Every structure is written in C-alpha cells, then in structure tokens.
Length: 153
Image 1 (cartoon, one colour):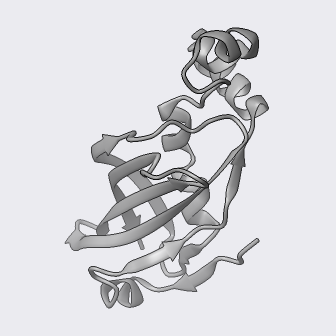
Image 2 (cartoon, helix red, strand yellow):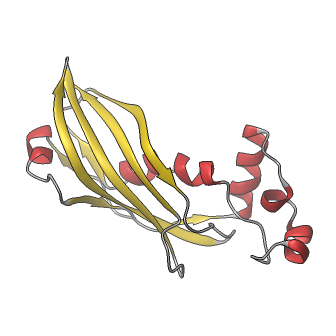
C-alpha cells in the first residue's frame, strides 16, 4: 500500500492540470457490495443475488452500485495524498458523474486525481479534481467525476 504524501496548498497550486495522485488498487468484493446495499437499502438483485445475477445478468455475477464506487473517492484520495497545512477538508460536492462501465464483484479499482482548478474562498481554498476510476481489465473507466473539495486552514 502506498503511503500518503503530504503536500501544502502552495504545492497543490503548482499541480494545476496535472495528475496529483493515483491510488493503489482496491478490491471491491461481494461482501463490500452487500454491506453497501444493506446500509443504503438498495438491495436490487443485480447487486446482492449472486444466483440470479449468474443466470439473468449480462455480467454473469453481481455488480457494485455506482454510488458505492463514488463513495470510495475519499478513501482512494486519502491513501495517496494529504494536504498537510489544511486543518479540515470538506467534500463540497460533484459537478458531473458518470459510470461508463460496471464494477463486477471481485474487480480491483484505482483512481487518478487531476487538479482542474483551484480558487481562494473565505477561510480556505476550493479544489476541483477531475477523477477517473479505472477497473482492472475494463476498457472504459468505471467512474468519471468532477469532485469539489474545500480545504480550510
């Protein structure tokens, strides 16, 4: 596992338009998918019924919820980079999200974070990252998103 690199907001500013972080691979298991389904109440068969998914799904097994994939953004970023001079980071939201490919149970995923913009806000700095989450052995990304994080000093 990669150890997170600590950088400052000034360092981040120098990375505009560049990949700031690329996470390690993360295995999305059937157990992860079932736990997410239970936590959110989204227990559609494509996610939790391995027998039916094997029989009726074009994927031959269960797949992760798109929102499960999206919820892993914080974990994937945190394992690679931290903003050392920020006292607090807030997930401010997303501008765009797409799920071009499914995450099949047992697939490893990893994310790349490219800094799209950085601007000063009251008490901090707002960063917008273009995120691409790829799945091992998938042709298209499993998620692409524009993610806004606010860092406060």
